[in-house]
Length: 490
Image (tube, rainbow, N blue to C red; front, side, top):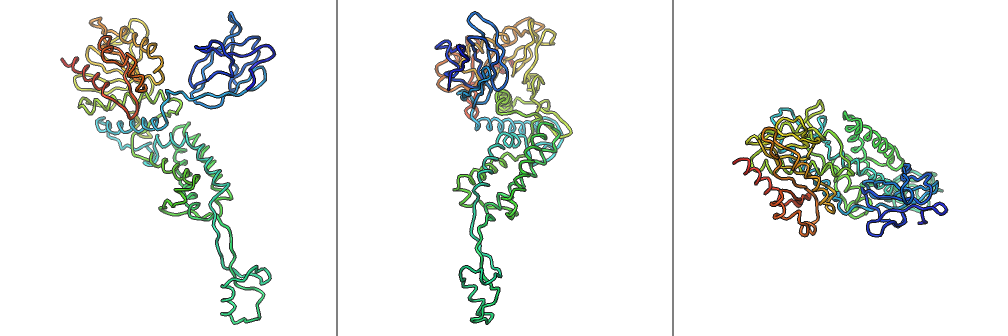
């Protein structure tokens, strides 16, 4: 890549180790804030087509920008000249498998808690149909582009076979004598007098093979599935489903599928499906799609893959719910759900203060709000909304999921001081927070070397960090909860 310059002017980026370096030499990672410097007059600097505002500093013009949450190409334009660089994945980012694991864990626990809610409405995944669900839509939405690529590759080079069809043909057009033709002549008694039209066999190349028949069946099933999502009372889902349905409609009307007979009923996975690299990806895509087909509590709002931090907060909360439910402390969970005319939905939206009633007058909150005029507990400075609060009559313990902070835990823990020191009991005036802990998907090697994860540090300061990774949950969180319950129960 050429230097991002215009004459004697050029664009630089601040690197903590090497200072100011040329922008094109920087290693950019997703969801990261960077400081830029332009030597000269930055009349027009755009990133992904959006103008970047600069302000005049001591050493040139300065600006800051945050890279997108997704990795991939980044287009930069400097004074009309375009360039391209790359944003690399964040090493702290959870994998797609862990993302799906969090979805499954949340909905599984939501289903388990529903029997404790006291609600008496039939529940299905969306309120309209038992064969669609929020997890299925999430998978379909983020992987539909992949399916389009697979279909295009199959359409260019589909499975074919040679098919022999009997027909009557003019004798001069018969290229070679088939046994069936000689047999027909003998049966008709023509002998040496060959008629103008003879019975023969024509060999055709056809795409109407079993695998393509199954493919056409799956395309029609997908079309009907998208129609169900299109009918949902959610404008964002319906709009996307309508767009995807139009794409599938074009597939159905394509010359490739027009001449193929649709398979009816059950189908088998042939060796071609298993061994051909492209057809195998097609089969696996649909296999994964229907694994999400389950009866359960749906979400009333979407979460994209880029908003994993939001899903991580919900997952941590539901893991605490599971811990308390299995220990026998959960009394009523009806406030976890919202009833609409479409059905019942898990209601963990921001600032909703979702609450679970526990034995002994305790409660578990999701994004509980505290301010100066709150009744039992209040703040004497600003409004505070910790993500997860286990609250007793006079004390509480705070958990704050932090998805992307393993390399900056000290700063994140510094923010926890406002919860530990700023939330007080209104009647006694004493500090209410008996522990403030960050929940983070930190790698094991960091857990072993950082003092914030050590029990001695946490017992001394009543603060620290707890590792919470989907599929790798330890006992540290359980011990914290059990210790708090023992203290408030005394």
